[in-house]
Length: 320
Image 1 (cartoon, rainbow, N blue to C red):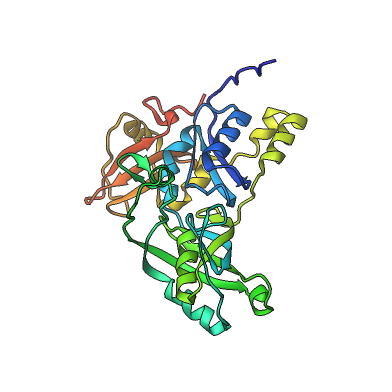
Image 2 (image 1 turned 45 degrees about the horizontal axis):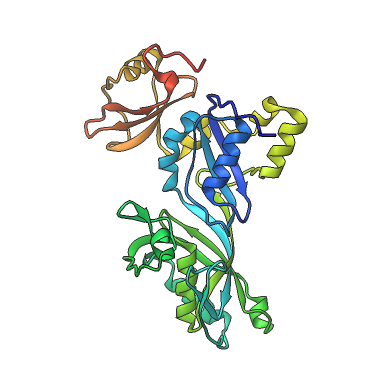
Protein backbone atom coordinates (compact mmCIF):
# COMPACT_ATOMS: atom_id res chain seq x y z
CA UNK A 1 0.00 0.00 0.00
CA UNK A 2 1.33 3.44 -0.92
CA UNK A 3 0.68 6.41 1.31
CA UNK A 4 -1.79 8.98 -0.01
CA UNK A 5 -0.06 12.11 -1.24
CA UNK A 6 -0.16 15.03 1.18
CA UNK A 7 -2.64 17.71 0.11
CA UNK A 8 -0.74 20.88 0.94
CA UNK A 9 -2.44 24.19 1.81
CA UNK A 10 -1.68 27.81 2.59
CA UNK A 11 -0.77 28.02 6.26
CA UNK A 12 1.06 30.85 7.99
CA UNK A 13 2.85 30.87 11.33
CA UNK A 14 5.99 29.95 13.25
CA UNK A 15 6.65 26.65 14.99
CA UNK A 16 9.30 26.44 17.70
CA UNK A 17 10.53 22.92 17.02
CA UNK A 18 12.68 20.93 19.44
CA UNK A 19 14.80 19.24 16.77
CA UNK A 20 15.73 15.65 17.61
CA UNK A 21 19.24 14.29 17.31
CA UNK A 22 19.96 12.46 14.08
CA UNK A 23 17.89 14.60 11.69
CA UNK A 24 19.26 17.38 9.53
CA UNK A 25 17.48 20.71 9.79
CA UNK A 26 15.99 20.22 6.33
CA UNK A 27 14.71 16.74 7.21
CA UNK A 28 13.08 18.18 10.34
CA UNK A 29 11.55 21.01 8.28
CA UNK A 30 10.03 18.58 5.78
CA UNK A 31 8.54 16.49 8.61
CA UNK A 32 6.89 19.64 9.97
CA UNK A 33 5.61 20.70 6.55
CA UNK A 34 3.95 17.33 6.01
CA UNK A 35 2.49 17.25 9.52
CA UNK A 36 0.86 20.65 9.05
CA UNK A 37 0.26 20.18 5.29
CA UNK A 38 1.92 23.56 4.72
CA UNK A 39 2.65 24.55 1.12
CA UNK A 40 5.75 26.52 1.98
CA UNK A 41 8.27 26.38 4.79
CA UNK A 42 11.78 27.35 5.81
CA UNK A 43 13.97 27.27 8.91
CA UNK A 44 16.01 30.03 10.48
CA UNK A 45 19.51 28.62 10.74
CA UNK A 46 20.75 25.04 10.45
CA UNK A 47 21.43 22.75 13.37
CA UNK A 48 23.82 19.85 12.80
CA UNK A 49 22.28 16.34 12.90
CA UNK A 50 24.12 15.79 16.22
CA UNK A 51 22.43 18.85 17.75
CA UNK A 52 19.05 19.13 19.43
CA UNK A 53 16.95 22.07 20.53
CA UNK A 54 15.29 25.14 19.13
CA UNK A 55 14.78 25.28 15.38
CA UNK A 56 12.24 28.00 14.47
CA UNK A 57 10.28 26.80 11.43
CA UNK A 58 8.54 29.47 9.37
CA UNK A 59 5.46 28.39 7.41
CA UNK A 60 3.78 30.23 4.55
CA UNK A 61 4.18 34.01 4.65
CA UNK A 62 6.43 33.71 7.71
CA UNK A 63 9.20 32.56 5.35
CA UNK A 64 9.47 36.23 4.31
CA UNK A 65 10.98 37.10 7.69
CA UNK A 66 13.11 33.93 8.03
CA UNK A 67 16.18 35.60 6.53
CA UNK A 68 16.13 38.32 9.17
CA UNK A 69 15.95 35.77 11.96
CA UNK A 70 19.08 34.01 10.66
CA UNK A 71 21.24 36.78 12.09
CA UNK A 72 19.66 36.67 15.53
CA UNK A 73 21.56 36.09 18.76
CA UNK A 74 21.49 32.46 19.89
CA UNK A 75 22.34 30.45 23.02
CA UNK A 76 23.63 26.88 23.33
CA UNK A 77 24.70 24.36 25.91
CA UNK A 78 27.47 22.07 24.75
CA UNK A 79 29.68 19.30 26.07
CA UNK A 80 33.33 19.50 24.96
CA UNK A 81 35.24 16.21 24.95
CA UNK A 82 38.89 17.01 25.56
CA UNK A 83 41.84 15.06 24.19
CA UNK A 84 40.45 14.03 20.78
CA UNK A 85 40.28 16.06 17.57
CA UNK A 86 37.91 14.90 14.79
CA UNK A 87 37.64 15.88 11.13
CA UNK A 88 34.15 17.38 11.67
CA UNK A 89 34.96 18.94 15.07
CA UNK A 90 32.16 16.86 16.62
CA UNK A 91 31.46 13.30 17.75
CA UNK A 92 30.12 12.27 14.31
CA UNK A 93 33.52 12.70 12.68
CA UNK A 94 36.58 10.49 12.39
CA UNK A 95 39.30 10.92 15.04
CA UNK A 96 42.38 12.69 13.69
CA UNK A 97 44.56 13.07 16.78
CA UNK A 98 44.48 11.98 20.40
CA UNK A 99 46.50 13.75 23.06
CA UNK A 100 46.72 13.53 26.84
CA UNK A 101 44.71 16.10 28.78
CA UNK A 102 46.99 18.17 31.03
CA UNK A 103 46.14 19.08 34.60
CA UNK A 104 43.72 22.00 34.31
CA UNK A 105 42.42 24.43 36.90
CA UNK A 106 39.24 26.48 36.83
CA UNK A 107 41.37 29.62 36.40
CA UNK A 108 43.11 28.07 33.36
CA UNK A 109 39.77 27.14 31.82
CA UNK A 110 38.24 30.57 32.48
CA UNK A 111 41.25 32.32 30.93
CA UNK A 112 41.00 30.21 27.76
CA UNK A 113 37.25 30.82 27.52
CA UNK A 114 37.79 34.57 27.92
CA UNK A 115 40.24 34.51 25.00
CA UNK A 116 37.42 33.18 22.79
CA UNK A 117 34.86 35.76 23.95
CA UNK A 118 34.01 39.07 22.30
CA UNK A 119 34.64 40.11 18.70
CA UNK A 120 36.99 37.38 17.48
CA UNK A 121 38.13 35.71 14.27
CA UNK A 122 37.02 32.14 13.64
CA UNK A 123 37.72 29.53 10.97
CA UNK A 124 34.49 27.62 10.19
CA UNK A 125 34.66 23.80 10.00
CA UNK A 126 35.39 22.28 6.59
CA UNK A 127 32.36 20.05 7.17
CA UNK A 128 29.80 22.86 7.06
CA UNK A 129 26.93 24.11 4.92
CA UNK A 130 28.93 27.14 3.79
CA UNK A 131 29.00 27.25 0.01
CA UNK A 132 31.86 27.69 -2.39
CA UNK A 133 31.17 27.70 -6.10
CA UNK A 134 27.51 26.99 -5.32
CA UNK A 135 28.34 23.75 -3.49
CA UNK A 136 28.38 23.12 0.29
CA UNK A 137 31.85 22.65 1.76
CA UNK A 138 30.82 19.33 3.33
CA UNK A 139 30.21 17.88 -0.15
CA UNK A 140 33.74 18.84 -1.22
CA UNK A 141 35.20 17.50 2.06
CA UNK A 142 33.45 14.14 1.63
CA UNK A 143 35.07 13.78 -1.79
CA UNK A 144 38.46 14.26 -0.15
CA UNK A 145 39.15 17.68 -1.69
CA UNK A 146 41.64 19.87 0.13
CA UNK A 147 39.73 22.90 1.41
CA UNK A 148 41.08 26.13 2.80
CA UNK A 149 38.44 27.95 4.82
CA UNK A 150 39.04 31.64 5.47
CA UNK A 151 38.68 33.11 8.94
CA UNK A 152 35.90 35.59 9.56
CA UNK A 153 34.85 37.91 12.34
CA UNK A 154 32.12 36.73 14.71
CA UNK A 155 30.59 37.88 17.99
CA UNK A 156 30.76 35.60 21.02
CA UNK A 157 28.76 37.31 23.77
CA UNK A 158 29.35 34.59 26.37
CA UNK A 159 31.50 31.45 26.57
CA UNK A 160 31.30 30.12 30.10
CA UNK A 161 32.06 26.99 32.08
CA UNK A 162 28.99 25.33 33.59
CA UNK A 163 30.51 22.12 34.90
CA UNK A 164 33.96 20.52 34.95
CA UNK A 165 33.20 17.83 37.53
CA UNK A 166 34.15 14.96 35.17
CA UNK A 167 37.49 16.57 34.46
CA UNK A 168 38.35 17.52 38.02
CA UNK A 169 37.33 14.10 39.35
CA UNK A 170 39.56 12.42 36.74
CA UNK A 171 36.58 10.95 34.95
CA UNK A 172 35.81 11.32 31.23
CA UNK A 173 37.50 14.59 30.24
CA UNK A 174 34.33 16.55 29.48
CA UNK A 175 33.46 20.22 29.98
CA UNK A 176 29.87 21.47 29.99
CA UNK A 177 29.77 24.97 28.50
CA UNK A 178 27.30 27.79 27.84
CA UNK A 179 27.59 29.81 24.62
CA UNK A 180 25.79 32.96 23.47
CA UNK A 181 26.77 34.15 20.02
CA UNK A 182 25.81 36.10 16.93
CA UNK A 183 25.25 35.11 13.34
CA UNK A 184 27.77 32.86 11.60
CA UNK A 185 29.32 31.41 14.76
CA UNK A 186 30.12 27.69 14.83
CA UNK A 187 30.10 26.18 18.31
CA UNK A 188 32.13 23.28 16.89
CA UNK A 189 34.89 25.72 15.95
CA UNK A 190 34.78 27.39 19.36
CA UNK A 191 35.24 24.03 21.07
CA UNK A 192 38.00 23.03 18.62
CA UNK A 193 39.86 26.29 19.32
CA UNK A 194 39.35 25.92 23.07
CA UNK A 195 40.98 22.49 22.88
CA UNK A 196 44.00 23.95 21.09
CA UNK A 197 44.37 26.70 23.72
CA UNK A 198 44.33 24.00 26.41
CA UNK A 199 46.97 22.01 24.55
CA UNK A 200 45.01 18.79 24.11
CA UNK A 201 42.43 19.33 21.37
CA UNK A 202 38.67 18.90 21.73
CA UNK A 203 35.45 18.20 19.87
CA UNK A 204 31.72 18.67 20.50
CA UNK A 205 30.18 15.61 22.13
CA UNK A 206 26.74 17.14 22.71
CA UNK A 207 25.05 20.34 21.52
CA UNK A 208 21.68 21.83 22.35
CA UNK A 209 20.31 25.18 21.19
CA UNK A 210 18.47 26.85 24.05
CA UNK A 211 17.02 29.97 22.44
CA UNK A 212 17.10 32.25 19.41
CA UNK A 213 16.11 35.92 19.54
CA UNK A 214 13.34 36.97 19.88
CA UNK A 215 12.32 33.59 21.37
CA UNK A 216 14.23 33.78 24.67
CA UNK A 217 11.88 31.50 26.64
CA UNK A 218 10.59 29.18 23.93
CA UNK A 219 7.76 26.69 24.32
CA UNK A 220 9.24 24.01 22.05
CA UNK A 221 7.39 21.10 20.44
CA UNK A 222 8.92 17.73 19.65
CA UNK A 223 7.96 15.90 16.47
CA UNK A 224 6.56 13.05 18.59
CA UNK A 225 4.32 15.45 20.53
CA UNK A 226 3.07 17.07 17.33
CA UNK A 227 2.34 13.71 15.71
CA UNK A 228 0.46 12.56 18.81
CA UNK A 229 -1.53 15.79 18.96
CA UNK A 230 -2.60 15.52 15.34
CA UNK A 231 -3.60 11.87 15.80
CA UNK A 232 -5.56 12.41 19.00
CA UNK A 233 -7.01 15.91 18.60
CA UNK A 234 -6.94 16.69 14.88
CA UNK A 235 -5.50 19.35 12.63
CA UNK A 236 -7.24 22.37 14.15
CA UNK A 237 -5.73 21.70 17.57
CA UNK A 238 -2.35 21.07 15.95
CA UNK A 239 -2.49 24.55 14.42
CA UNK A 240 -2.73 26.06 17.92
CA UNK A 241 0.96 25.14 18.34
CA UNK A 242 1.89 27.80 15.79
CA UNK A 243 2.88 31.30 16.84
CA UNK A 244 1.56 34.23 14.80
CA UNK A 245 3.99 35.84 12.38
CA UNK A 246 4.07 38.95 14.57
CA UNK A 247 5.89 36.94 17.27
CA UNK A 248 8.87 36.67 14.95
CA UNK A 249 8.83 40.35 14.00
CA UNK A 250 9.94 41.57 17.43
CA UNK A 251 13.58 41.59 16.27
CA UNK A 252 12.89 44.59 14.03
CA UNK A 253 11.94 48.12 15.12
CA UNK A 254 8.30 48.59 14.17
CA UNK A 255 6.24 51.31 12.53
CA UNK A 256 2.45 51.52 12.44
CA UNK A 257 0.38 52.69 9.49
CA UNK A 258 -3.31 53.44 9.05
CA UNK A 259 -5.59 51.79 6.49
CA UNK A 260 -4.98 54.37 3.76
CA UNK A 261 -1.23 54.16 4.24
CA UNK A 262 -1.38 50.38 4.20
CA UNK A 263 -3.15 50.51 0.83
CA UNK A 264 -0.42 52.75 -0.60
CA UNK A 265 2.27 50.36 0.61
CA UNK A 266 0.33 47.43 -0.82
CA UNK A 267 0.48 49.12 -4.23
CA UNK A 268 4.25 49.39 -3.92
CA UNK A 269 4.18 53.13 -3.12
CA UNK A 270 6.30 54.69 -0.40
CA UNK A 271 5.16 56.96 2.43
CA UNK A 272 6.57 60.30 3.49
CA UNK A 273 7.92 60.37 7.01
CA UNK A 274 9.41 61.10 9.22
CA UNK A 275 9.72 57.46 10.28
CA UNK A 276 12.42 56.11 12.58
CA UNK A 277 15.02 54.64 12.74
CA UNK A 278 16.65 56.03 9.62
CA UNK A 279 18.20 53.67 7.08
CA UNK A 280 16.95 50.57 8.85
CA UNK A 281 14.72 47.66 7.95
CA UNK A 282 11.51 47.81 9.96
CA UNK A 283 8.45 45.67 10.69
CA UNK A 284 5.30 47.30 9.33
CA UNK A 285 2.16 46.86 11.44
CA UNK A 286 -1.38 48.10 10.87
CA UNK A 287 -3.42 50.05 13.42
CA UNK A 288 -4.43 46.82 15.17
CA UNK A 289 -0.90 45.41 15.42
CA UNK A 290 -1.27 42.94 12.56
CA UNK A 291 1.95 42.44 10.64
CA UNK A 292 1.92 43.66 7.05
CA UNK A 293 5.51 42.79 6.20
CA UNK A 294 8.95 44.37 6.16
CA UNK A 295 9.96 47.76 4.83
CA UNK A 296 12.84 50.18 4.95
CA UNK A 297 13.16 53.70 6.29
CA UNK A 298 15.38 55.79 4.02
CA UNK A 299 17.79 58.58 4.97
CA UNK A 300 15.01 61.19 4.71
CA UNK A 301 12.65 59.24 6.97
CA UNK A 302 10.43 57.94 4.16
CA UNK A 303 9.01 54.41 4.39
CA UNK A 304 9.46 52.07 1.43
CA UNK A 305 7.68 48.70 1.19
CA UNK A 306 9.86 45.61 1.09
CA UNK A 307 8.65 42.02 1.50
CA UNK A 308 4.96 42.40 2.27
CA UNK A 309 2.62 39.59 3.25
CA UNK A 310 -0.07 38.56 0.79
CA UNK A 311 -2.84 40.21 2.82
CA UNK A 312 -1.08 43.56 2.51
CA UNK A 313 -1.77 43.56 -1.25
CA UNK A 314 -3.62 46.33 -3.06
CA UNK A 315 -7.04 45.95 -1.45
CA UNK A 316 -5.56 45.84 2.07
CA UNK A 317 -7.77 42.90 3.03
CA UNK A 318 -6.68 40.33 5.64
CA UNK A 319 -5.92 36.68 4.81
CA UNK A 320 -8.89 34.87 3.43
